[in-house]
Figure 1 (cartoon, rainbow, N blue to C red):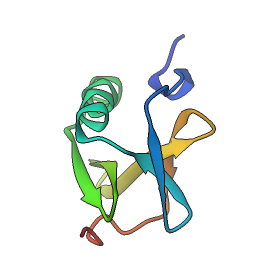
Figure 2: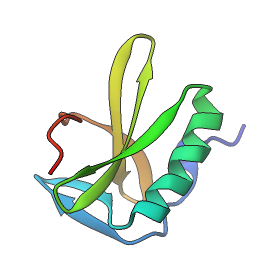
Figure 3: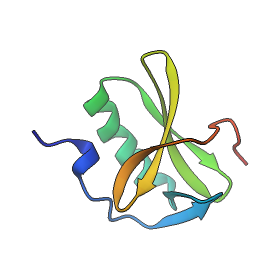
Figure 4: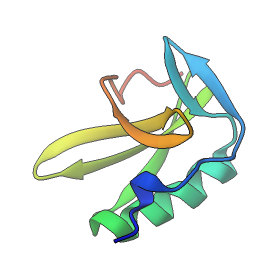
Amino acid sequence: MNSIFSASVFDATVIVDGHELFKGQGAATGWAEKLSRELEVPVSVRKIRTGWALCGTVDGEECVWGVYGQRLKRLDIDAGSAA
């Protein structure tokens, strides 16, 4: 079974507090749409300092995803720490 989590992320990224995030809003939005379809939950994008993260709620828990090793990864980062 193919999963969004096994697909390579070839978009530009930036490092924010040791986490790799999307550099552009457009790229993040494209991946948010794919992730939303995969998990069947709404996923939005949020700017966190100089990068863009994917944000959603899964099983009642707020989640933030970024990039790790050219794959999507759930991050231990506060989604409310934007700007």
